[in-house]
Length: 138
Image (cartoon, rainbow, N blue to C red; front, side):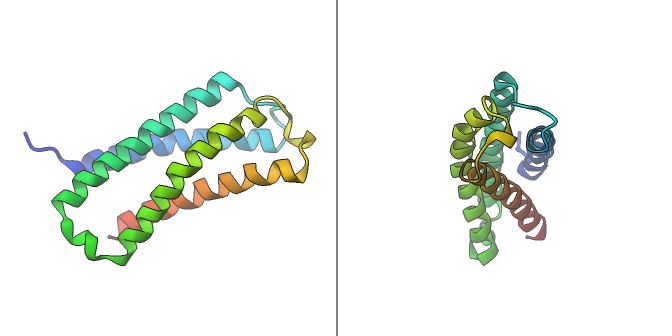
């Protein structure tokens, strides 16, 4: 049985994107003050699901690269890899920052406390979108 890495990669992307959009909406409710603090159990669950999605994207991406080694000659492939690395590192950062969002209202945070939350969200959003766009362009 031959594994269809492209279809699997797209399926994992679609499922992970749904969880990411839900997570981002949940976080936006916090930033807008619609939720005073975020539920730690929900945050942990969402975070684990996104980690599984990222791992699935990496695994199926390796399979795709083995099927199409020509991508290793493409400079944009390395830009995509840098974005995936940033997502991986940012995953740990988000795990740490989530503790703030589950204990302290956003409005109560100082700018120094808000900045890492906003920066981490920006890194996540830009790298997920950027890596996806590069993937579709290749």
